[in-house]
Image (cartoon, rainbow, N blue to C red; front, side, top):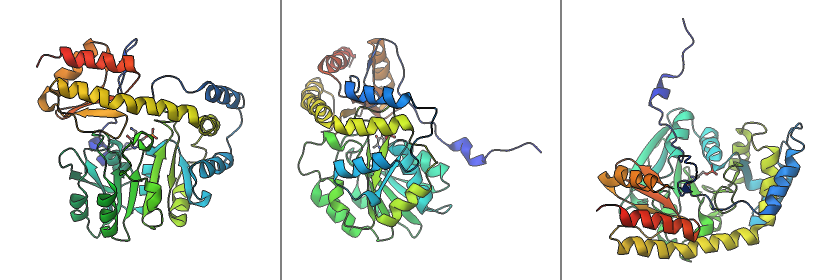
Length: 348
Ligand code: PMP
C-alpha cells in the first residue's frame, strides 16, 4: 500500500500570487511601492548577521513594541508569519473537524484555503453590490459556525462597512462565534465613519487582524498580528509553529514601527492618489466601487482576461480574478499613470 495524501486536497484551490514580470509596473499584490525605509533595511541586515541562532521564541521585544505602538494589551496579542498564518491559527484554535467558517465571497482568497487545510468547512456568502453583506452573513450562521472573517476594507473590492452597519452586525452575531475583523488595509482608510476594529475589543467574540505587509512595506518579511480575547489569543499563539516569526522578521517589525511616521506619510500619498485614479477610470467608462483600501476593483466580468492581457502587454501587472474582475494596487503616481494608460487604450 503506498503512502496516500488527504483526498480532499485535490479540491484545495491554489493561492494565486502576483506574476513576476521583469521590468514591469507591479500593481498586483497591494504592496507599498518603493523599498522599506533605510532604517528598516539596516535592522534587517543587522538581524541577518545572527541567523545561525534561533529567534526569540516568544517574540518578546516584538510583542512589547507592538502592544505599545498600537495601544493594545500585550497579553491579548499574537504575532504570526503573515496575517494569513494567523487566519489559519484562529481556525485551528477554535474549530473541530467540520465546524463552519463563514466569509463573504469574493473576499481574501486565502480564507477558503486555510479553512480547508484546518479541516473546517468554509461557507461563502455572496457580496451584494460588490460589498460585504452583514445580513447575509448573519443568516448563514448555524450551530456549527465558529468563526467569521470580515475583511474591512474588503479585498478585492475595497468596500468598507461603516460604523452603524458593523455595530448592528456585531450586536447580532451569536456570542459563541468569533468575528475576525481583518484590517489588513486599515492604514489606508480615510472615511472617519469606517470604524477602527480595536474599538470593538470590549466584545469577547471580536478579534482584530492586521499585517505589516501593506502599510509597513514588509510583504516579503511575513509578519502579522492579532488582538483578541486573552484566552483566544493564548490559544492562537499555542497552535503557531515554533519560531515561525523569524529573527529577521522580528527585527524588521520593530524597525518598521519606529519608522512609522515615514511609512504613514507614504500611505497618505497612496490615498491621495486613490480618488485621482478612480475618477480617471470612471471618466473612461469603467465601473469602479469607492475604495477605502490601497487598490481599486474593476468588475469587468467576461472582459477580465482580455483586460489583464492588455495590461501585461503594456508591462503593467495587476491581479485578475477569472470572469469577475481585476484589482489594481494604487502605487506611485507614475505607476498609476502607466495603469491608466493601459486602461485608456483597452479596446472597449
Ligand atoms: N487579509 C487580507 C484582507 C489580505 O488582503 C491579505 C493579503 N493579501 C492578508 C490578510 C494577508 O496578508 P499577510 O499574510 O501578508 O499578512
